[in-house]
Image 1: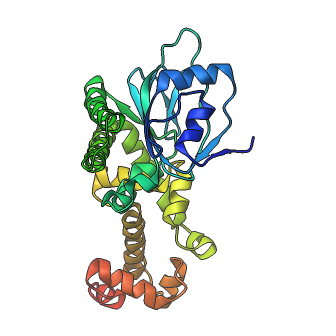
Image 2 (image 1 turned 135 degrees about the vertical axis):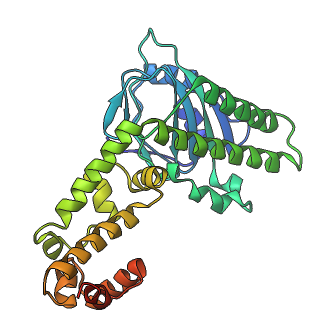
Image 3 (image 1 turned 30 degrees about the vertical axis):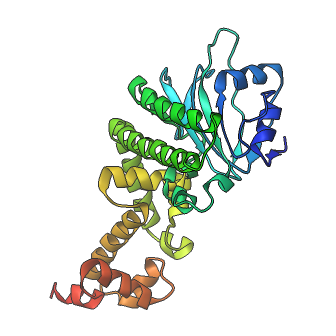
Length: 304
């Protein structure tokens, strides 16, 4: 089914049979009403021109986090950026009691503010839908309070202070979400360390034999794809667990293999660079020195 393009927040309201939004560029929607509309008709995949932040309860079926399934009764938080495709989830069954909210923000509402560019720094807008944030009741209550403040501002009589107050509350919401994601990475230690183990095995395989010669250096996108997570999610996870990005992990494994070849073989630096997937030995030497403070030859000589 072809995605349905939603050019405006008003179009979202129409699709879900809601009253027109009180503001054309920002809206808070009751998720229970959206779920009710889904029961009446099938909602196609959607691609919108606005940001969507939501907290939902009463979702039908299991939630997927990364490529694994979990049973959660807690609230589930999603983030969608403009032009991302959302495949509508199954509608709750008749016995479910959906609740929550959806905050819709058109980029024009952010125009001229620090958040217009700053919103791009929040990695979770790049996450796939199944990489949701699971909330405790306390965390959800904190976010609900921020949403209530936003609602009071745009639903009342807007004045010259309203937009700046709303923008500050949106930023507060995003900062709380960032904190809660960090908590989620830490509390899922067993699952997350399994990802680390798989990453180590993957990089070992990438640099084994003629792998680099045939395929070149593994990219961040390739590694994330093999681990079935998005590049942004993997980088955030690794940063939280190890303090290093995906690229740094790739480089660390590369330098480890380079040191092994420099200390145990008579291959020239150019030959080693080629075996590790570099087209130019100068690029290899530059990276090696930046990571070890020694040139490849200086490292080799230290063993003589």
